[in-house]
Image (cartoon, rainbow, N blue to C red):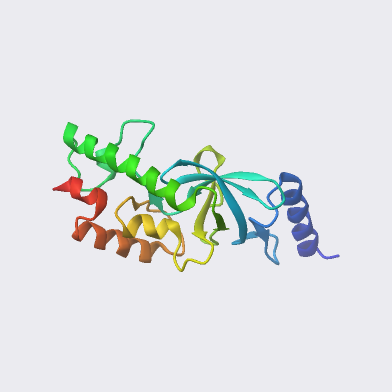
Length: 186
């Protein structure tokens, strides 16, 4: 067995022991690659974070990759949403859209079978050790992440990931049309 094969096997064993098999799979050189698994959404934490259960019984907290909805458990930060004034009315508007984003996520995702897909260009874990991934409701043609941007519930969370350009264009369209939270900027 050569060094590359041993490294790949070691990564596979570590992933299996950590309960992450399938969500992240090792490539031929032993480095993690993108992967996808089907899961059930067991809880919607807020507009951009959900808890899922995979078929093997493991659970993960998933932070939706590439998007950021206004906070619901803390004061929203208008400075993170370009053009939204840092005033009480701007914060109130964002707070309302944070609640709406959470309701939208609950309506679309709670109890649903979804595909959880990591991205080869993105970090696998974010703050608080949450899995960073796209979440797509089974049978839909776009990720829920993208729907949040299209419908004005979120802003682009500008990091490296495969869909970054498409997500930026979706946010730009929502902003130009003052869709959703972008009406807070007027």
